[in-house]
Length: 501
Image (cartoon, rainbow, N blue to C red; front, side, top):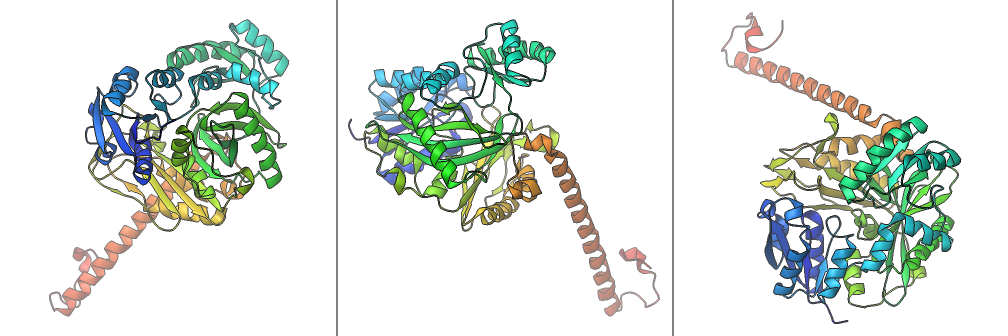
């Protein structure tokens, strides 16, 4: 395979900037694409070349496979990096790149098809002796069959889209009545999101953690895991905070589950960077749930604790290079935490918040990293994902990383829109989070949103009291100054100047 000299980034926002920076460090020409909504976007300015895609809607721009391929060919791009979201897990796009002699920086279309079909993937994992969650062995086509499987597995159960991802197409049923109600909802949601209504039934495991292992594998058959990330803090199956290492994974467990994750990757002949995702129950059992066949949003966490650049690794593997280290040569250093900053109002049921950002202040300092597309005067669009920034901190241990995150969140200001920063501030000081006592229902179970609201009220009251005290002090200063200048008599009632008798 020839050396890559130019890469088209088929994405936008902070991930497009992330790939552009890696290209610049490697001396590779970066090519950006943009919609009408992103004409003034920073990734357009930072790339070596930029090309217009189409209308703001993703279906008319960032999802236009033929248009992206045409731009790649006319611009002379050797490869395409899909980032995450959009076309990153689309096997047809991967195959289209291959047909046009363009390197797709990611897995093959065949591997992507296997990992995208959860039932096929589960079947392969069972043969590879990878532990999976109890439930249906295949797609459940009607509610009667779903009820039979749920009865055998025992309630509660989850109804999940066989082609789902990002928390979409998942419904919880606590009994048969709920299952019959939710089956239709889950089917419709799956069809709307993924074009297919195929569902499967999975045993719901209470008090679980979501732990994933970062994986890489080259075309020479070398597979490595880059340790775990704890992703248990979620809302509606959407990750909010990730960290590495996990508070409950010791070295022996890390080695055992890491080996299983590499086995899972090898079983589907996976190439490039990906993630094996597991659920861990209260007894410490791990169950494989899926492979995400792309670079993850939370990859900076792994970069901090390993010292590796995952995007550079992706590019080198795509140009047929071997992974330059052995598993035993890797070490996990310190602790890293990532908070996803979304343009949503956590005080208003996470309603979208979009519009112009007149100003923003990004935090900085030792062990602080901000991946964002924000700049003063930019616009946060309602056409795309709500993620506007990723705030990542590193420390020698969890508490140092947490304190750096707490301070960085206090420094981080984004004017013009509401964000999830207040929620993250609350979590950083919450006693269960500090103790590592976190699960996938952490937000709901512990009333974190209510705690956030209470904290906001206390903060507002504190500011109000501070303003009153400052006003009184200013009034007294004004009175004394005027008295000193003989502008008012000693026996004057000075309430007119804002003071009190």
